[in-house]
Length: 77
Image (cartoon, rainbow, N blue to C red):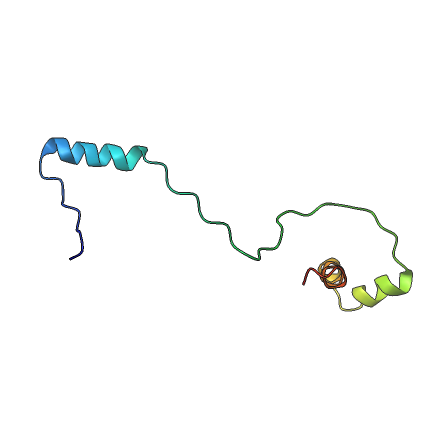
């Protein structure tokens, strides 16, 4: 038999239930597993011109493509 919480019937019980709902801190969400690290760091690196041209040839998003290639090379993907 499942337990069902009873509804507050008196004014005092209703007030306590409202106070508890207003003052209870919500649970922190559970962190996702296999999440990509948050945040990025700006760095300056030297890349051969032909390598840079290869990634830039496909247009916008070339930095993300370089990042993805580096993740694969580092064994993070």
